[in-house]
Amino acid sequence: MTTSHLWGELPEVKDIRTPSMLLNVQASALQEMTSGALTCTLNRVDRSDGQIESHLRLIAPSLGNYSVVLVVILHQVLSYPCGIFSPFLGGGLVTCQNEAGLETSLRDILQHEKTRQLITNLLNQIKAENSIAA
Image (cartoon, rainbow, N blue to C red):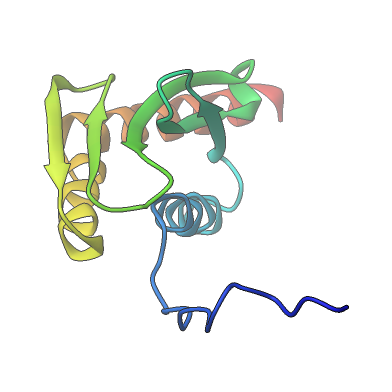
């Protein structure tokens, strides 16, 4: 006696970008824009409360791997809604109901004046270090 599967029809897979995918795109973009002078790593933590925590860490490899966590995103196994905050900027957790909301909040963090100042200062230090070494 054979038993057929009892799953029914599986739902259609939708084309959404997960929070980790959005962070990965931004990490690659920064590395390309700075010709590798600045990079980013993505770290994922599976928390005991069932949430997934994704960290975007900015790194300056030529400055002794100086790094700072710019963005943290929290979500359940379902990507949305999710929460986002910046340990670097301070402030509270912002809830995003969908990909568009997350993209807006992420843009606000990455284009924040303090973030831009950090990137400018790091690039200036890298340029100065390269001038000294030459």
